[in-house]
Structure formats: C-alpha cells, structure tokens
Length: 169
Length: 188
Image 1 (cartoon, chains in turn purple, brown):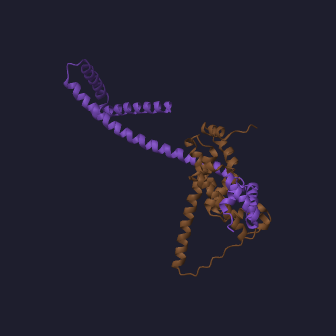
Image 2: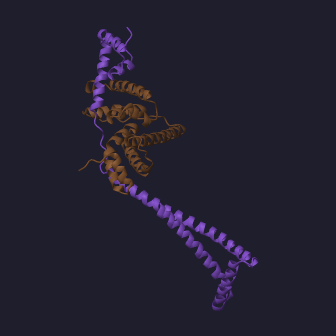
Image 3: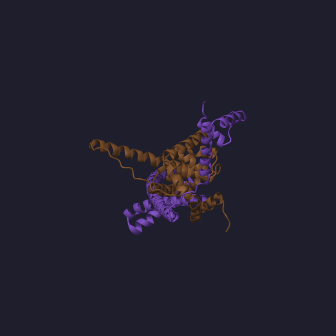
C-alpha cells in the first residue's frame, strides 16, 4: 500500500486539500493506521507550535539600544558639522578666487568704456575710496583692503544663501 | 493609557520624540529575539544582532514606506541581519577548520550536552534550533508571530507558494528532529 506523502499530510492539517483529494485521503486514512498516526502527530505538532511562547529578550535591552541610538546621533551630528565646515572653507576659497578675478576684469572693462555713466560713477567712487585709504593707511594697505572687502562681500552672500537654504529646509 | 499604533509611534519619533522609539522596542523585542535566537542558535549573537537591528531600523525610519506593515518591514531587517551574521560566522568557522587542518591536529569536537528541561516550550525551542535557518524562520514567523504566508514571503523575499512548501517541509523536519531526539512522548 502506498502511504500518504508529507505534503498530503501537511495540507490536510492546513485544510488545503481539494474536495476530491480529501475523499482520497480520508479513504486511505480509514484503511492505514500508519498514516492515521502520522496525521495525528502532525496535528499535535501543529497545536504545540500554536501554543508555544516567545522567548524573553534580555532585561534592560531597550535602555542599551536607546543609548546606542543617542551615541550614533551625536557622532553623526559632529561628523556632519565637520563635513560642512570643510565644504564651506573649500567653497569660500573658490568663490574668493572667482570673485577677485571677476572684480579685476570688471575694473578693466569699466575703465575702457569711458562713456558709460556707471563706469564714471564706479571710477569716481573707486578713486575717492583709494585716495582716502592710501592717505590714511598707505598704498600697501589699500590692496589688502580691496581683497578683504571682496572676501567679506562673498562671505555675506554665502551666509545669506546658507540661511535661505536652512529656512527652506 | 492609550495604546498607540506602530504608525502613530513612528510619526511621533519622526517629529523629534526619539524616546517614543522605546515603545516600539518593547513591542517587538521578545518576538524578534525569539526569531534571532532560533536562527543564530546563540543567545549572545542574538542579543547583539537585536540591538543592531533596532538601531538600524531607527535610522531608516524615514525610508519606511507605509505600504507594508511596520512589523513586516522590521522583520525583514531582522532576517537580513541574521543572514549576514550567519554568513560571517560560517566564513569564520571555515577559516578555523582550515587552520586546524593545517596544524594537522586530530579533530575531536565534543558537543556539549544540552540541558534537559521538563518544560515543553524549552524542548520545542531546542528542537526548532536544530532545524536549518530557513525552516526555523518560517516556523517562527508563522506560529509565533502569527504572520500570513504572504507577509512571510515579503520578509524572506520569496513566493507565497514557496513559503507554503517551506512550512510543510519545516514541519516534517521538526517532526523528524523530535523523533530522533526521542521527544515524541513529551511533545506530541
């Protein structure tokens, strides 16, 4: 006699047999004590598994996890700040170079196009400022002043953009 | 006290109340620990991976899409972490075996005898731990976590039919382990 397969027995436990399969299985079970016992033990295993209890996690594990999370949050934050600082320094350097080159170029352009009103105003203001600073501090300080002003200008634009981004975020 | 749903807790955590995450930890720690212990067959490893899973899930909460249940999403993290841990352990064992072979030592592994307990639950746990990982996962998720075959299929990344097949095979394998250990009288 061919016995029922594990699959048939399992499907019988789960009530997954079709009507036709059910008739065949029941017929077999009525004639075969081996398969009846097998089905019985599968059914008791199923009930046993349904009754099982979960295992207890170690005491105080939630505190350990929360501490780990807090630690990771702190380290992520400091890493982020450091990264932002490096990026800021780098972009400031690039912006200063571009700005300074642009400033020098614009000066040359304004000096060439004498007819322009803006150029005239630019040249006049620039000359007045130069005269005041060179009188007060000397010729060398004038160059440093130009560069410093330019850097301050770029820096303020950068911080404005950052502030805008932070507000939007 | 009002019982908050998983989603309500997640919303609260995402709004900045990180301490509320402990509610989720308390809700899932025992079940996740049971699953990990059965997969990893070691309490220390299970505890370590459990902590990592909760930390990982906390920082990934933003990416949790509410299409699936939180439990399904979280157990997927647990399952994948356990699989990663197991593959690491297997590699380590292979290396250790290789070094033993190289030293030309006679291999005598003594298997410590398992503590006998009268409680059915402990006996059952011991029997389940004898099963291959994929069987113990399916058994644990189906019976202990009361998950449907569909949910399990999402966690272990396979088809629903395959989960059913795995479930049938794992029950048969568990019955085999119980009979090999002569535990039929105590358990079945």
